Length: 85
Length: 80
Image 1 (tube, rainbow over the protein chains, first blue to last red):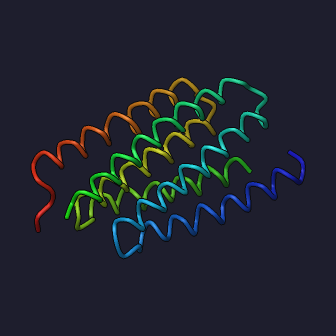
Image 2 (image 1 turned 180 degrees about the horizontal axis):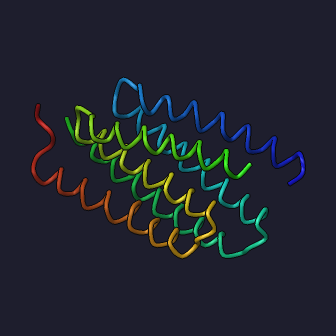
């Protein structure tokens, strides 16, 4: 690994940590859902970066499947939160 | 480097699982369960098991959350 990978993983680690803190102590459920969506996008991009690091094209399929399914999941929970009251 | 990433993701998974059990509202518990599934997929990718990661992604992100949220909507929400 060269120095660019270290910089990328340190920055992604800070992003995951602060977004996870918002998921833990968010006051409402909408804050937790927004933090979950942010984590979905960040970790899907990290899986694509790992496909570059490991030099294996099979990891791109995981990122594709998880990107589609996380969108469906976010829309389902958001529609539940919208129709609650 | 890989060991540091595995320990970091494992600690976040343990905290998320404890939060999913101890949460007051049911929808917060579902959100924490989905987050634990996402971190599990990332851990499978780190440990170089892509087929297990694809299965965990399709079951944990799509099927489990959809079934749980539709069942919660059908029984009329969470009342304290």
